Amino acid sequence: MFIPFLSVGLCGGDDDECEGGRVNYIQNNSLVTVQANSNHFGVGDTLWINTIVNKNQFDITSNSEVNLFDIDKELSLGISYERASAYEQYFQINLNEDAVVSDKGQVIINNFILVQEGNNFVNRSGIKLLEAGNFRITDYDINSYKIDGRCSDPRSNIGTTISNANNGEFYEFSVE
Image 1 (cartoon, one colour):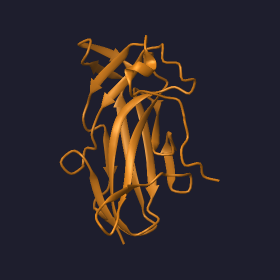
Image 2 (cartoon, rainbow, N blue to C red):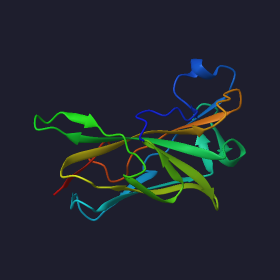
Image 3 (cartoon, rainbow, N blue to C red):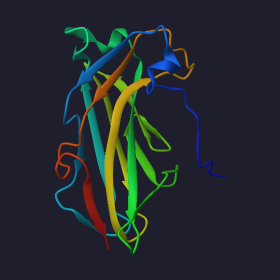
């Protein structure tokens, strides 16, 4: 049974939710890449998304280097996966366990969980393209991922983009 929404203890978003904890604000574009040589796919293909975040990042608020391994055990990248209707409006698709495969990390609904590997946080997951149509993917920030939901500890918020997205916003593709 698929649950349409799952609260997984993401620590990010409004600072009011996590008062008392220090937030590292990092801007590092192009940490996410859609691994594809084309924007046209067939039903049954898998669209791979790679995310690599080096543990050493620059916090723009404190103007200093931070080691993310000192703060986080895992990070979470939220994505929006949408399908165009006949009227060119886009509708959100929630990914479930039948629609994704992961080589590194995991996916919980539309949250790609990055795990520590070497000097990086990584996730390599694929979206199984199960139906024809026009689609687009955009990413949200990468945030600390904490199952226990404690926000009194320092946490990370990394603004990023998909490296091969149109105008730095959407990766658009079609499935036939």
